[in-house]
Length: 88
Image (cartoon, rainbow, N blue to C red; front, side):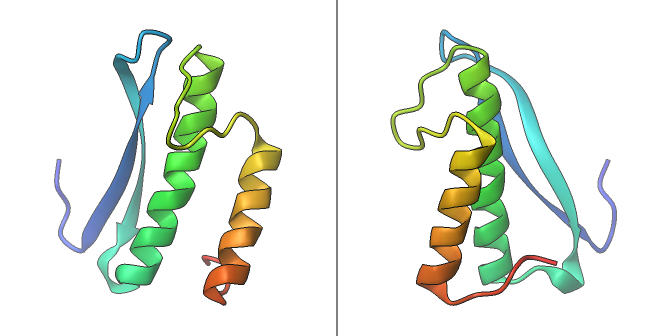
């Protein structure tokens, strides 16, 4: 259901055939949501769903992340490039 004051961001999880089999999502209070926060959270969820999809046999060509270390590396790169702080 929908809740007033809450927004969400989600990303698909795919199996080896490329079929969407699940989703990974996160609810966020509206007062915390802005364009920067939303885009950074979306990036983080895409990377996490890419890892799960990879473990299910899916090879993502646009976001090829296979483990948590690659997420950490790209997340740090993104922070340096954007000059932004951690999501809290």
